[in-house]
Image (cartoon, rainbow, N blue to C red):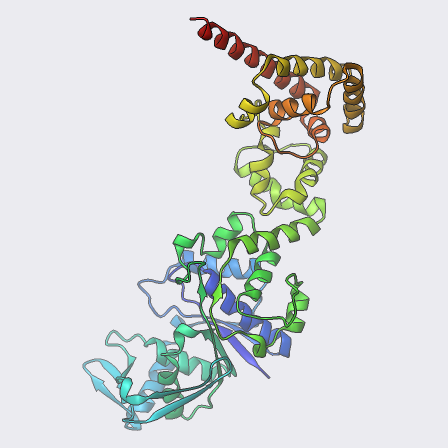
Length: 441
């Protein structure tokens, strides 16, 4: 039975590269009907912190990557000491002060048959003797990694290609202890668009940060799968089940993947479009409460309808408050360019007054009824609809882009619409009066 593992260290948050490595291990195990092990590499007692462990476990659960077994290396120190002493007894290691050190064979080629990079050959002349147990009694990384992979029956070690230099060292330890070698697959790194190693300067790197920014777990998993794996066609959107069925190490690329946040945003937006309105509201409502836009007791039906109005415009969940924040405030924040273009003439003020008077008496304040009354006004005055709609959109929303203006009016409600149009008309006239006074000086 194939057995894979993901072995994060709780000395930092789970980042994009680690999550991608975990995903490939998880997909391979689920695709082959194997076992997926999560092993916490917490041997660095001083740097390992509970907050990092909690974040790693929470992020993996959020991404939907469940594990079959969980181990903590900090609980396995006696196991590592036992095998280090065996190597001492066999004459393959020596003591130096309190440390136990493995004696690397001289001038030997170590051959690794990598599933992604094919054959890799490293001569032992480039490898110095390896610490097994440090002088403080803690095990060294390469040693406990090799021991655990062997004892846990790991058949496929799938990890980043930054570990290629560790692999020959671990192979020597496998051989010295009489363990069977697993198959190795080293995944190329993820780079930023500038071809540099992905880091904070390229944006968020922690999975928890992407979660806070409003990305959906299914979308992030979809995108991570495409960072280095080729489905063999032009398809870009995959359900989790489809990924499990299609995944193969044979289709993992041997060149670095480029992280493209615009592509991630597009994929996330496609997932948002497919979510049921009620579920989407479940995601967005807590964000609105956290940002102070709404409180407990908000009209759920109204909120769900409003979110549905913006559904096709969202790339992330946080986009909603950015685009629709004016619904929750007493006044809209007006964009200066929009004001200069559409709220800067006495004619605009007059048109706002006309529109305000026309909709004031609309009893059933729905998009359909509002539109009907506005169309009547357009016909009566024989003016282009845009002369009413453009100033109204800026007055109500603060900008020039929004969903249909009649739907916006319905969700804003009559009172807010009347107040905002009246206020904008007054401000226009005040500016015009001041401008005329200044021009007469």
